[in-house]
Length: 95
Image 1 (cartoon, rainbow, N blue to C red):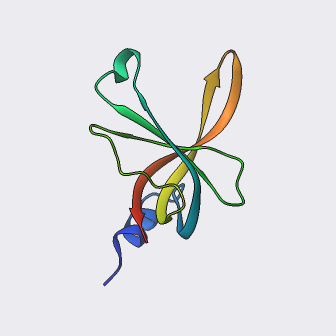
Image 2 (tube, rainbow, N blue to C red):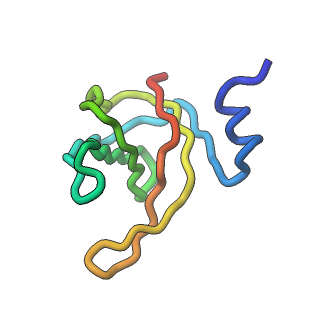
């Protein structure tokens, strides 16, 4: 039987799955505009300079220093007129 992450990556080839990565920084912010009801979470992981973002309806547990498994895909976000690469997290779970 395949795991959930294998099923997702087989069904959607642009997804990437990483296991047992250490979280260096975790920030939670209230959403703005259409995302007001969401809390925007930004995670930075070890050996990667790209931020990983995900949304939750409620505050999420602090992940700083934790090891996590993540399924994500690359995206482009425009901030102050500059295009930045981010990773949009589809699934995150403590290892």
